[in-house]
Image (tube, rainbow, N blue to C red; front, side, top):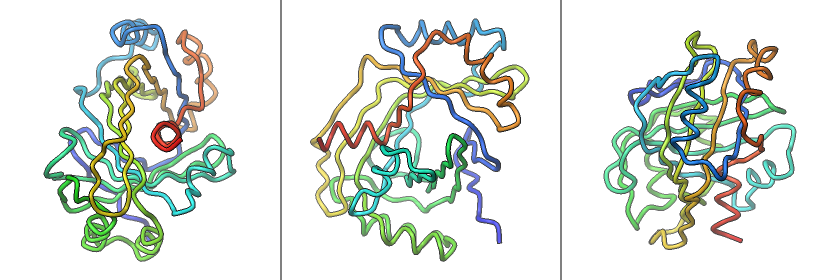
Length: 239
């Protein structure tokens, strides 16, 4: 049986196939300057969707296996998160569970809609486990989630661009903020780290576009990086 794919909030793009992601870390340019570079690209990137805030709650094992797999570059790496858009705190109306799986440089994403919950200082594993239990998830997914605990919350402002042909997409993330979270109660979210100067650009495309991707990426005067917001967040709020 194929896993359910979340319809998601407006503008949500669940993956139905593998794709590549090239990430660039920009320091020294303003978001406006970065947008200008993207808009002037020969592929004629245009704003595909209004910008918005993206919020993510990450889960990991108690031994942080997902974190260490990503740091060490394991052949298969996973990230498990609950994503929603708009306000950070309060009633979360349309959260989506995402399980990102990457083998080498190719990744895919399994997405499942969740019932709403409230994000406040009482958030813990029990809140999410109730949401998972009410979501009708496949048994194998529910079993995996029972072994995970909340470890990190992050938030950033994202701008969306797509090439005129629709074969390449670019996102621009600014104001990335990380909060330490835990599976127990009373998440005061006091351990906060913000990257005010950094701009993160991601170039995303299907595996069939890989032959031409190098040429597309070469027009961006940005530094290619293995940047992972999850890894960066863990290292900033725990180390």
